[in-house]
Amino acid sequence: MLLLERGALGGGSTAKAAGGIRSSFTSRVNVELGLRGPAAYRTFSRDFGTEIDFRRDGYLYLVTDPADVPAFEPCAELQREYGVRSHLLDPGEAKKVLPLVETDGVRTAWAGLYEMTPDRNQIIGESVLLSRFFYATGFSGHGFQLGPATGELIRDLYLRRRPAVDIAELDVRRFETVDTAPAEHNIV
Image (tube, rainbow, N blue to C red; front, side, top):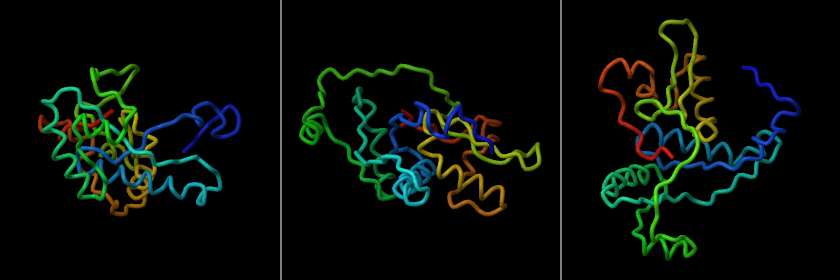
């Protein structure tokens, strides 16, 4: 691996960016991978000797269409099975927990470019065409969050060890058939 920076590593504006780290995904593999990031970031300064100002503040989705709520219910249950404190709140409950959140007239909005695979899941694995060629791509804005887990996965694949998380459904060959992995619902 080669990392190039104009000055000191991590010295540019990207190193000062804020990012969301969460485990509120809709599939088993993404919840498992999402949990590995916070574990690594909590001990980052101890393990690497530099502070990254990691804080756990929580994560909030505002669902704008009541028809979407049923899709979130099994996702929240899956997350709770892994110890993620995931709760579905109606607008009144959200207002009690976060009094400054304005829930009236919430509209969906997004600006910027966002790479996505057809099923909105990342692609991780080893090529069947090129010997010892590994890939990890298509993170759709979740690369930093999933970076620690992805590094472990690629390391394990390279060393021919069984990865701690079953990533079979993230293999690129899933796109060879119409039946792909279930689409990730909570992508942003």
